[in-house]
Image (cartoon, rainbow, N blue to C red):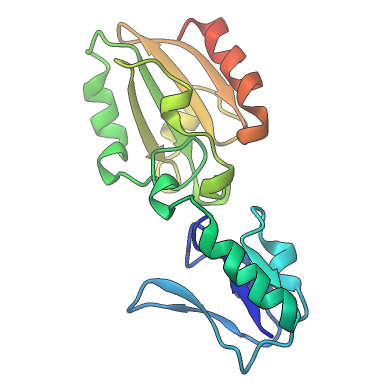
Length: 199
C-alpha cells in the first residue's frame, strides 16, 4: 500500500520534504488543485517521506495498517484551518502582515508596542511546529514580518546574526531583539525571553 498523508495536520506545502526525498517521485504537487498527491502506482513503500515529515503527517503502512491509519486520520478532530494562523518562524498566512522596509520606517512613529519578525527563505519552518503569534503577545501589539532576502539593511542596522529574529520597538525606539527559531516545544522559553523585554 502507498504512503498516506494526514491533511489535518499537514501544512500541504509545495515545499514538502517528501517531494524531495521520494526516489520514485510518487509524491507530487498538483499546481491546479494546490495540494500534495501520492501516486499509489509509483509508491515503493520506502518510508523516506515519513522520515522527512517533521510533524508525522505522512505514514507508510501495510495492507491492514493502511486501512487502520486511514480511519484514524478520518477521526482526527483537528482541521487544516487550525494551522493557518500567523506563526513565528513560518511562512506568513496573512499577506497583510508582510511589509517592506520602507513601510516599516513609516511605522516607527506609532506609539503602540511593535514587534517585527525578520526572516529569509532559509529560515522558514513548518507551520505545525511553529508557535502562533497570538500565544506569544498581548493584544494591542503590532506584529509584522519582513523578508530580508532582497533587503539586508535591517540585518546590518540591528546587527542580526541569526534568523528568524524578533525586533522589539516601543514609542518608535528599538528596545531589544531575540534571534533564532523556537518551536512549539520551546514556547515557554521564548515567552520568558519576551516577558523579560517587557512585552
